[in-house]
Amino acid sequence: METKTKDSIFMMAVTAVMAALIAVVAPFSIPAGQVSFTLCTLLLYLSPYILGWKRAALATLIYIMLGMVGMPVFSGFKGGFSVLAGPTGGYILGYIPMVIVGGLFIKLFPRSRALQFAGMVLATAVLYTLGTAMFCVQMKATLEVALINCVLPFIPFDLGKMAVVIIFAPLLQERLAKAGIQLEA
Image (cartoon, rainbow, N blue to C red; front, side, top):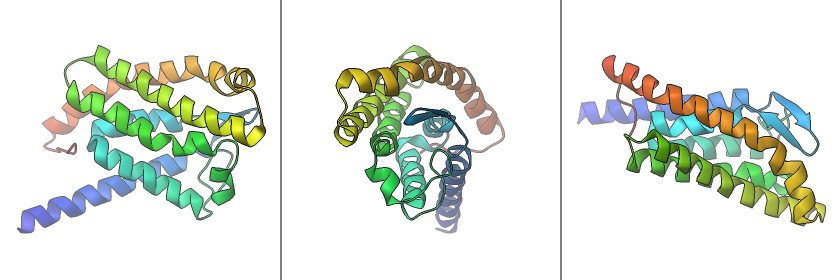
């Protein structure tokens, strides 16, 4: 029973550390109109490899809640509910289903990097769909305007982040396993 409690506490701590890492990285951004370039999605693609999809989604939710209560953890060091209710809020809220979809592909296809990559692409499409829909509503923008400003410029960078994660995350998993650290649930 004591080992189970220690394991639970350890996993809660690791989940909190991932939420903190996301919160530290996400505010640093390069503005590109309404939506900014950040490394946040890099950590979101990586988190299911380390935590499993459920804990990765929880870490993402914790990050979003930190921002929602006003901590400056969103792009450009912004925080507060108004950011989530604004034009880019759909992208931030879309992080949760993105992590779940990508994480499920990682779990279901642990040996296929091609299918894991496909899962990340699908997960990012979910993110883009939710974010773009909210952007269109909030900004009264057409789909064409939203795609040109909020999706197309980000595709190459997101594909690059996915490639980096696909290459290095399995190596990180192996190293952690060799060190006797089993994090994924």
